[in-house]
Amino acid sequence: MTAPDPERARPRSVLRAQAPVVATVAVGGGAGATARYAATLWWPTPAGGFPWTILWVNAVGCALMGVLMVAATEWRTAHPLVRPFLGTGVLGGFTTFSAYAVDIRGLFEDGRPTAALLHLAVTPLTALAAVWAATAATRRALLERPAGGGAR
Figure 1 (tube, helix red, strand yellow):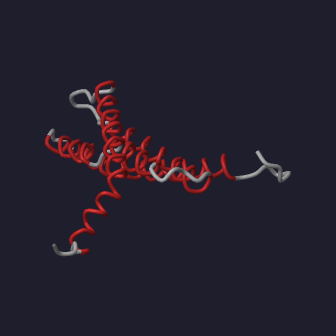
Figure 2 (tube, one colour):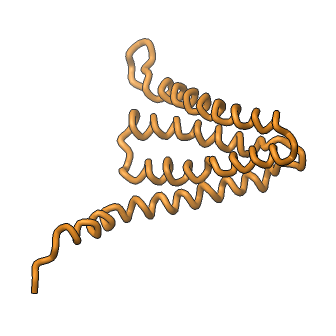
Figure 3 (spheres, one colour):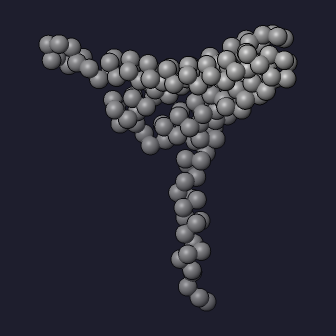
């Protein structure tokens, strides 16, 4: 019998070590994607309408990502699976580049290039503004101390 080849055994051990993270992201992603789909059912885009739901889903998801990153990295030490579950999983599944791209293509196909270009520009700007504002507000709320120096 020969000794196990360490090069061959290594990928299996890496995969085994990452299995909890992969499972956590998968469960979170399913929950986030389900929430996004539910949002499109609750607030469908009417024929000829602007895809506001996807724009707001992306903005809300980015704002929540800003809150999460401050809370989990600057305010409290979070469990190692919190960021993969909530950030990559839930919020990654909730926010959507694919539906955004499909909406833009649909607007072009419907002969509405102005609305398509507006959506193309406004969605990422809104998402960036949302993450920036939420990060700043969360830092102010959680990290800044009152003028007297007392703890909150």
